[in-house]
Image (cartoon, rainbow, N blue to C red):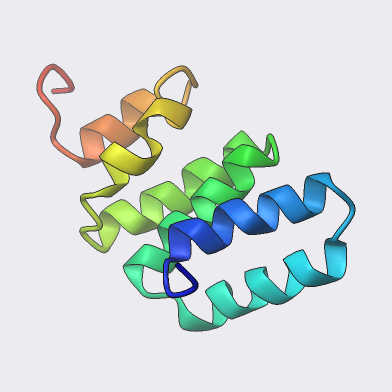
Length: 98
């Protein structure tokens, strides 16, 4: 699924973790250049899979601001256990966050 920003983010993270830095950089540059809401989620996945939770939460926040609601299905499991989740949940007006 080369058109999928989430897949591109996952692939970039795998490439970083296996030493394919130049290929990963090319994918990340493409995601950052596009920056539709889905690209923001792809960047959040990339950072989460690389263990960069603070950056992942920042990209997730931007995706939420752009109303990328599939974010919760795609990234919720990565961000729920972090200290960033309450603020992200509040941005999405999830029950129990007020």
